Length: 168
Image (cartoon, rainbow, N blue to C red; front, side, top):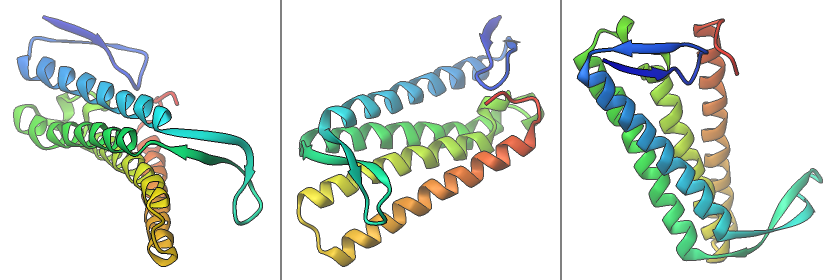
């Protein structure tokens, strides 16, 4: 018998299904990779506060970028995204959708994978700035990352609609 807390609700799950335990561990590993990406990303960029963006809004300005650290953070984000995608593809083949906990549902795995991809792309923008990428390409990269984060926000709103009992 396997027992754990659901990350989206204040409840415990109990199962004797080995696939459930396996994919729960894969989920935890994906979260570890994501957190490693965040840690290394912060080491890769030094920020100066406060700053202003092109529209005059407050923001953090990148002062210094460590190329190796940002490449490493992208690798961790990609690993995390791949693990979330693995869960999304494989777990429904082992269990019926109604038996899969909310935090391992394919829609939530899509959100998690998209978020990891958005964070990796964010760090790639910092690398592009370091390499003095052309303005048009840089603007295109920024637009792409903005769209990824907007997609994540939209997915999050859809997830909220799926279950009124979810605590955010």
